[in-house]
Length: 375
Image (cartoon, rainbow, N blue to C red; front, side):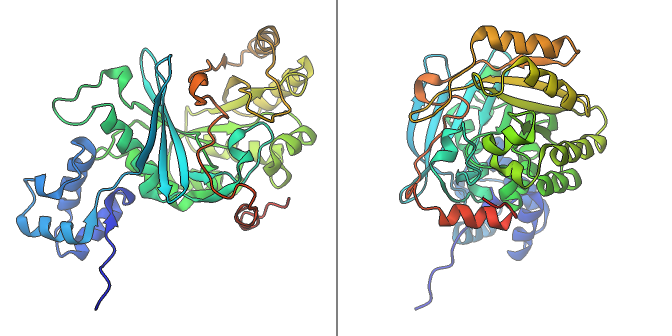
């Protein structure tokens, strides 16, 4: 007896991929855009309800395809309006996605890997190890699921401007550029007018400095780029962000420079976590000024969010203010990130998901070796 044909999750296909899939069913390419509108603009997953598709095509889709978002394991609201979803990836693996509403936007922070291979010293996510990359469908499915949960699909959508997904940031679990081939189609779907239709300025990819990935991004797609810098010299960054041992600050900044040079009026968002007595001195601020002089930037200072077992503590409010003032005195646009969702462990650096076999290092090291990073 023949094994059943595995269904294709359409959330994993960008427009070109969906057009190829539709062509394989013997249908015309315009059917792909009709499908996208049903899925991404009306939030419909049931092919039987897609009334402007022929019965024959609906039958083919029912047999060969599906629209399946990750399963929700928990949905935790914060007192400040932040909301965190724990999503099941497989039998015992989970990731986290966080929605952060504000007066003029709704930002969704999504994950790109189950765990993270980079093991940044101050990050709870990195301490749990690395299990696997997410598929494109699992990345896109986070946005689709949250948009549906917020009630923003269809003509009778309930979501107000600050209670719907207006911005997507790839700043959750994982290093996006170490899962590049699955992240790229997701970025295209986020900005496709027939899908989520987000502006390229409202989709932000954050990287720890994977230089080949930044260069691929330069060639392939235009999104907002954020650099998790966190240190102003290689000696300290080698300790805090180990990927720096492969691609030191000079090389990373040069890659960021190439990225903005290819995009007029673009800047790079420098993310800098504030660690008391580690990277927050006036001298560090002056070193950061020198780095920022090399390309157009904005700086976002991130108060450190503690987690069990960490050796670090957050810089005082006074120290953060003094550090920010030194940057602003040199006309560098600098903000301090407001801590959100701390009561549900949804703040920056706290996402830990649920990764089985936290002590298993084989998968993590294989990922690092593939990128040419030595531990």
